Image 1 (cartoon, rainbow, N blue to C red):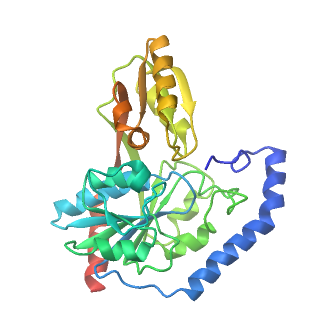
Image 2: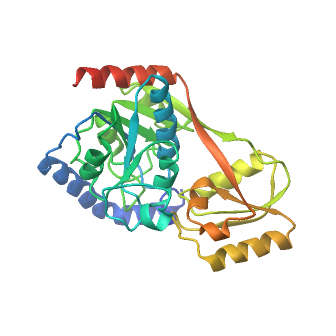
Amino acid sequence: MKEPWFWRDRSVSAQMARALLAPVSGLYDAGGRLRSALTKPHAAGVPVICIGAASIGGAGKTPFALMFAEKLRLRGKIAHFATRGYGGALTGPVRVNDNHCAEDVGDEALLLAAAAATFVAKDRLAGARAAAPGADLVIMDDGFQNPGVKKDFSILLLGAGDVDKRTRVFPAGPLREPLDAAIARADAIILAGVEIVTGAGEISGAGKPVFRATTQIVDPPAPGRAVAFSGIANPGRFFASLEAAGMTLAGRFAFADHHPFTSAEISKLKSCAAKENAALITTEKDFMRIARDMRDDILTLRIRTELDDADRLVDLVLEKIGSSR
C-alpha cells in the first residue's frame, strides 16, 4: 500500500484526519489485543527468533535478518528463514527454489533464499515448523504481532517515525500497535536511523537492550546520471541514498510498495533512461519483481545492515534460547 499523506504530515488538516480516524484506530488495537488474548502460541520445534517492526511498511527487517543470519553462521549456528511471502500467490508451506519468482513467493523471500533455506507460508506457524528440520533455529522475518508462534527471542526494529510521539496506530498512522505495547514484548530493540527524535530517549531508557543499526551501500555505483525507480515503502530514502553516493537523478519514479512491474512499465523506464542518457537503477527488492527477460541493463543498489555491538546481540540471543530449551 502507498502511505497516506496524513500519517506523518504536521499540518492542521493532517492532524484533523488523524483525529477523525482515532476511534477506528482504537478498534483496530482492541482487535489485536483480543486476538492475542485468545490465541495460544505453539512451538515450532526449534527456537524461533522474530525480526519484527512496530509499523507497517519498510523497517529494514529483511536486510537485518540477512545480517543476523550471517552473524549466527559465524558462531556455527544454522538458521533457516520463515516468511509469509508477502505479494506471492503460494499458500505454502513451500521451500523457495530457483524456479520461483516474486509472483510465487514475494520479493523478500527471494532475497532471503539467496542466503539460506527459506520457507514461505501464509500460516506462520506452519511456515516456522516447515523451516525447523535441519536448522538450529528459525529466523522469522516479520510476524512480531502474530500470537500463534512461540517466539524465543523477539527483536523490534524502530525507525525515526515510530518513536515520534505524534505517530498513531493504523489507520490513523502506520503503527501496528501502540509503541509501548510493542516494546514490552521485545527482547531487544534496534533503532534504525534514529538520531535525536522525540521519544528516542525514552526508548533507550525502557529497560531493554538497545542497539543502533545503519544501512551501508555495497559497491556504490559510479557517479553519473541515473533514472531511478522503486516500489518500496519509502522510495524517497532510496533516491536520497543514490544522490548521497554521487549520482544525479535525471528521473525518479515511485510506485506502491511491492508493486508488480509489468513489461510495459519496464520498457517505458528503459526508454526514459535512454532518452536521458542515464543509467536505470532500482533496489534489490524491486529487481526481484521484474521479469527475468526484462532485467538486462538495469542496475541495482545493494545494501547491507551494520549493527553496533552485533556480537553482544548474538550473545543475548544464544543465551536466551539456550536457557529455553
